[in-house]
Length: 153
Length: 100
Image (tube, rainbow over all chains, first blue to last red; front, side, top):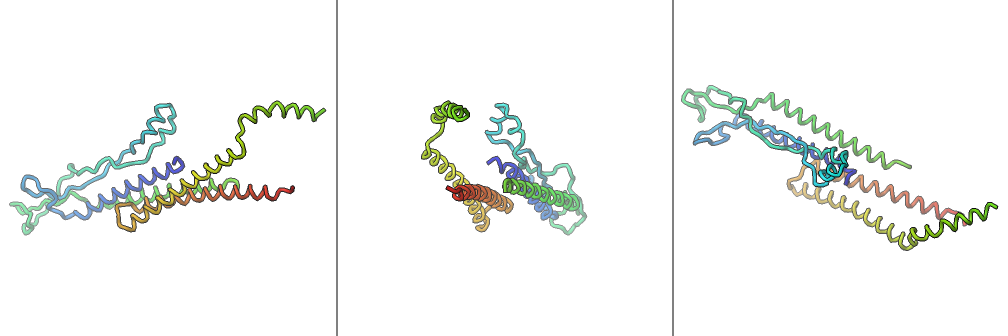
């Protein structure tokens, strides 16, 4: 199915961007979640999650192609996949003064998730644009294939 | 003078051609098999598209874009088959139009 190779690569990118979007949705939804995780009998707020990507690992055939010197076949790549979803431990939790909150500490401060709505919005726009770009690539690929079918008409 | 030389060329080439060229029946079988396999592939793409659409409608865990892409693949494969078919029919009609 090598004529659909590029379509498959674009499809993997679309799937990856969808997953990124899902993670962003989760971050946005949990923007006020103070009980994200129970650590040593104490509630910790929700931690912002982010997605990292890696090139998709090839099938056996692509490794074989590289091994027998058919380099250009193996070097095209197979698209992208999500390597992992990690929690953001760098950004500190926001401290909000609210003594009436059930999760407030002795001084009346509540730890809020380290989710920044601005950052999430920008990430969301980036994911949307990437998705659109990949759909454009896909449509161009299809247009090329359909043009090829017109040869000799 | 010209005709014997052509005949000589023909006799020289004939034994080779006889060895390699398959009989009419064989070539028809091969062509038939090729056509059958090609159509089988196209059918597989269509069935895959159907399965994906059904999964989506049933609410299973499939991405919308994957459904669309599978449908597009099936459509491209079918279009390619149609082009081949059109060419074959064109060739057939060309032969049928040949004055005898």
